[in-house]
Amino acid sequence: MDIRRSIQGGALALALVLSGCSWFDSDGSSPSADPSPTPTEFEQSNVDVASGSTADVTVTADKTGTGFTADNIGVSFEATDLADPRLDPAKSNLDEQLKALGSPALRFAGNALDRRTFWTSKGEKPKHGEKVTITPGDLERLKKLVDATGSTVTIGIPLGTFDPERGADMAAHAIDILGDSLVGLGIGNEPNGYTVDDVPGGAVRGEGWNKDKYIKQLEAYAKAIHAKRPEAPIIGPDVYDGAWMTAFADSDVKNKTAIAQHWYQLYECDSTQVPGRGPQAANLIDPLAKEAAKKNLGIGKDKADAAGLPLWLEETGPTSCPGTNDTSLTNASALWAADYTMYAATLGVERMAMHSMLGACNGGAPMSLVCDPADHGGRSNSFQVRPNMLGLRLLVPSVGGQFTKTTVEGGGNMSAYTVVKNDGRTLVTTVINANDAASVGGNPVTLSMPSGFAVDSASQVYGESNDVKSATQVVPANPLPDSVPFSGDGAGGSSSGGASSTAGASSSTSPSDRTGDGKLRIDLAGSSVTVFVMSKG
Image (cartoon, rainbow, N blue to C red):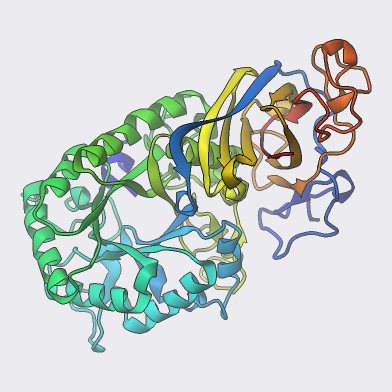
């Protein structure tokens, strides 16, 4: 987490007959396998009424310049997790959970890197009281994971104790073992917080520590690393503060590969203000969240552009505040994860990793995408997912696309993103409806497509409200039925999408029929993320 920012301050709940699949038990845990049977049509089970304001979503194929890659969906872990035998695909289902995100970016660092992690390739004991020892065998196990998931990975090199030769030895082994999967080495984690006592392990530098001293130590590490492996890719500075980014960019470090930024949406831990940046679920989906993201990620993007480097958001999440599992478990976190990830990509973030750890679901770290259902202090080999992970899963169909111009008129708290793929033959539109389902049920939405396109399938995550905890539901990707509910202007007929012919709708029998008017009219559930995949005939 970004220390400077963070210290401011009984039965499975599903209804298969209605096409909803729950990933959580009523006690807050989640089942180990997908429910079955799988529905054969996309059907929203929670839209009895759609009293929300109408929305017009207009999709185009006009590219806006930025793209969405596999690395835009990612997971950050603590460096100490490298020692966990469950990284081995043969020892747990972690690889399967990660593969559900496509080939996600992986990162290992976090606060534990500089305070609890000791590297050795010679069998030594920790030198300064570090709690976890990492060896080449741990990196070999990680290689099995990245081979299974097709992921790229970044690794943090400990800087808490100044030891350039040991850091160079770790870097050399990481390069040799991980090969092309390794795309970045970060030297230290959040060095701007090295004098802060409010983290596990406390301060690792004295009061005189500043960015100039950091640069000297950074350059010493990089020189030692490049003496062993000249091609080593160095990223940094893994902080929020723009001045430290400039210092990294201006340093004499060779082969700088990316500006690495950290940022958490809700960092004012003591604040109860809504809207605001306090750790309340409502703040995740408030429209002001985008303004904060644009401003703060813009700091990193400006620094990266000035340095001619890409911007990688190496550590991020809903909040780094302690005791915020309630916020992290809400359905709002699923909506936020999807919206924030797409929005950050449109701003030019080329790699993103949501901070997580392999801890317990009950009493473990908040915000983590995955968790262990065993009692706190115990371990199992079957990791479960949290709502934010479900939101990210929906974004996989957008991987490999370029963003296009998409507009939303009306609809209240709603946003949409579209990418074009397959040489212009496929459009994927993601609609985040953050209007609270508990209040509006849903919103009548008209989705206007370019000429010749029609909806092939839709998928969705949703909850009964934005605030509901551990109850986010999944509707898998399936074709639309012949008739979908629509209660907007002109509704009541039997034409495409449920809209009447008096509303100018096509009289086709299916909303996917390409003889229609290029519009899908549908009541879209509140508290949901919905992905429409469209193809051109």
